[in-house]
Image 1 (tube, rainbow over the protein chains, first blue to last red):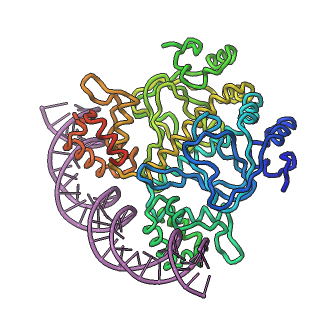
Image 2 (spheres, helix red, strand yellow):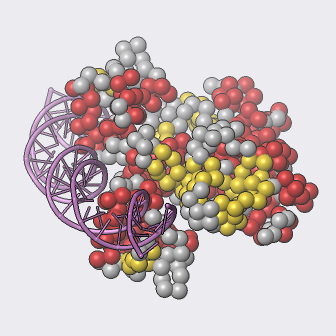
Image 3 (cartoon, each protein chain N blue to C red):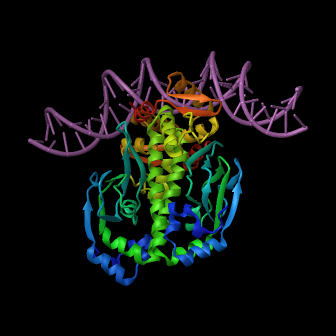
Length: 229
Length: 229
DNA sequence: TTTAAAACATGATAATTGTCAGTTACTACC
DNA sequence: GGTAGTAACTGACAATTATCATGTTTTAAA
């Protein structure tokens, strides 16, 4: 496993690319590489974070418990993303939990390095700002989808999203395999309702399944469904 | 009306407080004061913004149209807030429309001034970052509320929020008067459903109404209702 | 390999919310 | 002061979604 950030291609995909050589060296010297197993938590809602996580490999879900005890998944992270910035910047407890959906490889970067750099390198701040601006826009979209679309539309949209962002294998099944429970927590519905909807999609030939695995068969029709015909 | 930013107290409440004297002077020299009448738009979803708005007086709603044509209100702005930063920072079209809920007084600040300052003053960037971090957290909360709470719970929460953030008059009516339509677009429900729920709350003595005006009678009970008892 | 636990699935039913159709009340403008 | 137009409201009904109960399959561990 590559241990020097200077040689790590992942950083090209996130705000760390704005760092100078010196700054990058500091990050590399202080960072800690970690392996997180599927199902393990990176951090939990309400915790104080001492740094951020840079995702080298694997996918995690960012979720939050509602007062009724149900989990709501707010976002899935991609390879190359930095997690926990919001909390470190606002010097606040995390408002979300992060859980590995498959085996992950992440680098933990202590907050001191991050905040020092934020105070001195405006290009880095700007990069972080751009990333956060993007997250905020996506969050707004999720709000609108949640409140204006039906569960069916949201599920159709989720399938299209998962194919676009995580791809599929040679047999046309989504590379990112989620449990039915996770699907329910993404679209914000009862697990039973969600399973029924998956059955319905399958019956209509929009998707195919093989155990947990789900394949997108009719992407255009799913997209139309998501948009409300 | 005060015309020099140097003397404007409003800026203490937003990221502009991180500006140096020189920077502040530049802002003051380039800014344009505007009055926006109730119901008028500050900007519209999909537009390219040439700057940001600093709210001196009045309240606006940030909303987005869903594909089915319904409006979803994502956020109400407070006095002192800066609007349009996300779009200017990301050099992106606005994803939201801003409409005045009552008569407003705002200052328009051209984007060049903002982006120059972002590139040179890390404290300003950090302030903007903190503000955006706060918005992002709130957006996450809204997502969870939208997907996990009932319309009744969301409405109860909205009433408590409006009282806390905008206060009430001497007779116990909310200072911020919204149309039933706006309420529906905040909680994400059909207008008829929302009106029915207002009637129900009134019948139960949780709120009182007088035309459009709404007064909070049983704040604790509303809060409990919002939390799911 | 058996067995317990978890995940997946389906049916029946109830609760929530939306839609359509219509009435009443308020507001603004000639 | 009449009238057009919009907002507020109500009823009846339909669609969507949650809940509870129960059975089946898959997974993982003893």
